[in-house]
Amino acid sequence: MLWLQGGPGASSLFALFTEIGPIYIDANQNIQLREITWNTNYHLLFIDNPVGTGYSFTSNDQGYARSQDDVARDLYSALTQFFQIYTDYASNPFYVTGESYGGSVKPSPI
Image (cartoon, rainbow, N blue to C red):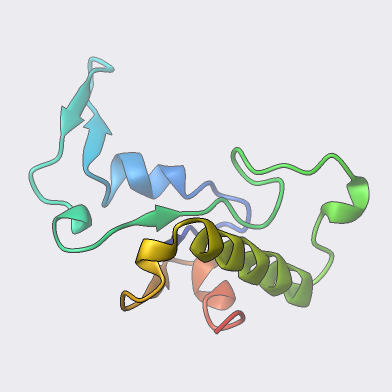
């Protein structure tokens, strides 16, 4: 399952650590296991999108998206590379979800 965060420009790691991921950071800044997590039923993939969000980067200014088509192309490229590297996951059912602005990106690469 691919998770796309809102924003635009919000890191998907926000959902990983504060919403649906298997761990969270408590009030004392300790890492804890979450009792209820989507990870119980799904393999979760969090991608910072568009390029430049969170830990995603490009060394070339031309690599930043200038349109929704650019965002979709980059996301499609990232997913293609992911499944080429992690071939065991390629035959699994694949779901795309997210919140807020992530919903405008979800339909694009599909």
